Image (tube, rainbow, N blue to C red):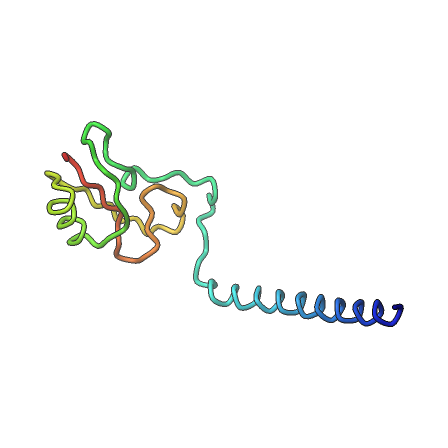
Length: 115
């Protein structure tokens, strides 16, 4: 019984060592992959620029998702049968928590309006 507990402790220690070494390697890989991103000095207390805010409520817009502008226009007219659309391109890294932010470059938040 004592030898089984001793072996289990050794296996646990080896596993813990692999976990610690593996996690430190992952941190270096993550730092290397994201080295080009540097948040604004105000981050995370930045406020969303007025150009990136959603349309006024009286326009009766439906928030959809991040698309390119041609798809937004077609989707609003054909699928949602809305009279207009508003496409807000917001790929600003300092506004990642903003309601109009899209992670894909060239995509914007699509609002179908006057439905």
